[in-house]
Length: 454
Image (cartoon, rainbow, N blue to C red; front, side, top):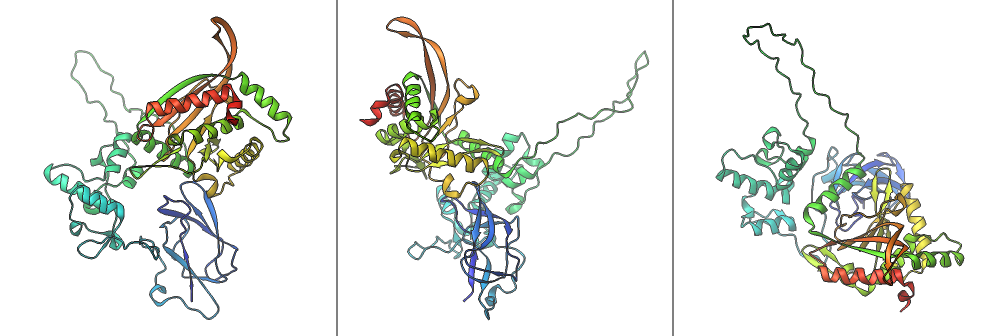
């Protein structure tokens, strides 16, 4: 029977994927294991291989289309096979249909009219006491956008003149300083959606000429008014847009707090010299920090936990993300199982991850599953900084440069190499006392690395 080609799920939280290109044209032959298409998620571009041999047919998505995960977008036909009758004429666009549930999954919720409802939409409707039967569904399924638009329409009935808009659209408009009334909405009943706000462009402003004013002396009236000058827009890559969106969501939704600690770095520097003398792989301060941070997290598992769907979820392993600056923004490749790695393994894996990040060859597995992040700007001469938490992680460690400072040693001033650590925390997962105990543990490991062996 025809083999379905679906939009794959490359991440746990992924809802859609963008089809970048087909490697095989419709009607051409493809072999199992050969590159079939390239898909972009919010983290990485991934080449998808064909799962069967045959002829590519019934292509339902073109390059640039955003397709729901699990949606059928083409078929691979064996010799003599034909497209399913129901799909033979559907060639223009992909309808936003939900992915098929697993065999052991509970059935999708339905409205009174029998229309399926996404779990998020069902929860939103329940929270606001909305009858699902009253909500119009686009594409045969009620989504969270439909509930949000309906809720706005009900609120507008009590407040005449209020513009219909989704909550996300209102937030974006407020951030951009745009009046919702100036934007044409594409949602139900003309509601303004987030996409409408992002696509909105201000109309050209015509400056009125000054009118003549009666005065005892002649007044020179300008014949033209110079238009205000603005700088050219800087084009943003998709990666930069995703980074901006994610960090904005984190900054506006995560209750951050910060702890700062100055740590003596003499022992850390001596440890690096000793470790380098026994290793053929370059050992950096970042590698040492990964090692001691992984040990500290294993001893303080709450800081290694995550905030997922309103719950604190413990992570069984320490997967450390390392913030890496690339041309298109910021990537955070992950060292999986860092708590079980030796120093040489950490250094080797860190080098490989950074090289793949800078060459744009990171795989999805390289970017997912992180439980804690380290961001080190010491190599750029930065003394200290506050980092933004990377959800659903509970915390991120910001590391400054090692610099000589005057400190008190046995009651006397002395010059010592010092390092400033700043721990940013999500207060929903970690309170101040827990974070302080973790930071104290980490500082102790840096100042006395032998404690990592205890």
